[in-house]
Amino acid sequence: MRVRRVQASPVPLAYGGHPDHAADLFLPAEGAGPGVPLVLFFHGGFWRAEHDRQHVAGFARALAAQSGCAVVSVEYRRVGGGGGWPVTLTDAAQAVDRLPRLVAQAAPGRVDPARVVYAGHSAGGHLALWAALRHRLPDGAPGRTETPPAVLGVLALAPTADLAWADELGSGRGAVAAFLGGAREKVPDRYAAADPSALGVPAGRRSWSTAPSTRRCPSPWPAGTPHGWAPHSTSCPGPVTST
Image (tube, rainbow, N blue to C red; front, side, top):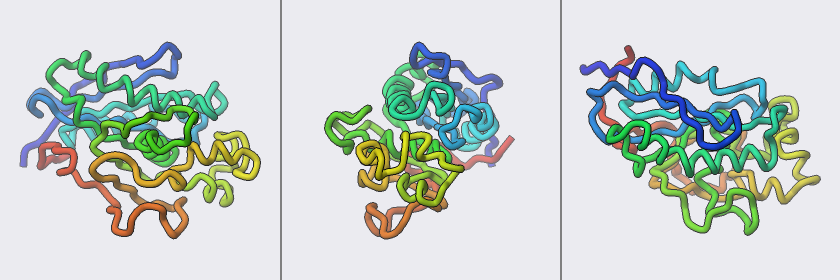
């Protein structure tokens, strides 16, 4: 079985003017081939400033090495550091809009910016889902687009996919209310524009969600929506082992 490796140091990227408009590009080794797919990964941590992308650096590196895809670990403004409604969402929108082009410029010929997957864990899984739902946002909502995002699919790892339910559960010691500025009864328009469970099926050929512990039933997504990772859908070359 062929072993893949990852480039020694990530490539730093800036998708905007704020210090938190930053990202790290992890490239598979040269032998992975030209034009590999791109994964834009959002870290979790309750959308709070004390949690940043550094805690997923090892994961992003391993994902690039094992999948043969390029992986970008995305930073964004968070609650307690200038983020929250609507800034965290507009940062996520700006990141997915700009980073594929920036990656193509930083690694000419290495990455195919037309083959993109949005991914994330926990609160980052929420942002990945939301970014693929921007064409379904209410008129005038921050980050709304008229057309579906050009994304192959979404990989959401234990996402906060139902914000209203997560808030009712008290997830993260009030993390959802801190993120959106209150409970759904107080700011219903914000929940309508930020809650994946209220927005329908994300753009892309397929979407995956693992351990959807904060998504109530019945789901607004169609019966049979797959859960888990399907590497062939991103055309990542395989097989792989860790290094």
